[in-house]
Length: 254
Ligand code: UGY
Ligand code: MN
Image (cartoon, rainbow, N blue to C red; front, side, top):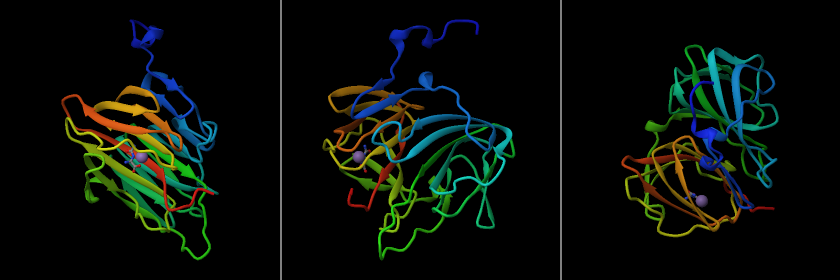
């Protein structure tokens, strides 16, 4: 590679690994491949190797025409969110959904999916976890949609809005929320809760207080927050900040 990149200076590294959180920045992400995905660079963000994470989250970079060579997702519930590019075709349960940036699909455990980037390069996030069944609680349904078609609900405790991409009722054991913060917005409390988070910065920048640290975060950064990690965010910069947040919900923690 010609020229000097920020990664040439070790002291420019912003990545952090702590007991209660992990920060991974674009400069930290290593190329991987995953079985049955061809023409796709996979960058694992969280997996159960980050103890105690009970979910996987991957940044997928599709080359034109890249995709799955067979149905994927067996044994897990799966969520896909298109970040940018031409989009993805997701085929599941006999239907094809064409997702553009901001589009998403949730497939309950037991519904495998085919995936293809039919146009030019596309980037997407893939979240997977094992569904936690509860006696007497019906199974979740598939969901597809677009972030701009979902209601963005004002929440004073975060000083911003959240858009639940999935229903929040007890059939669902995971939430995927898009949170948005105007310039200067801040949480009104330091949250401490038993759920874990996978947070991907979609836009803007801000400061995350995690455990005992204050960390600058910006578009493209990923944060894993373990259960009980104290967390507080305030938006900085000159544009709106936003992130996509995974959270396990509606289960008792046993
Ligand atoms: O729902 C949440 O736990 C959310 N307010 N947490 C966060 O954004 N760090
Ligand atoms: Mn939280």
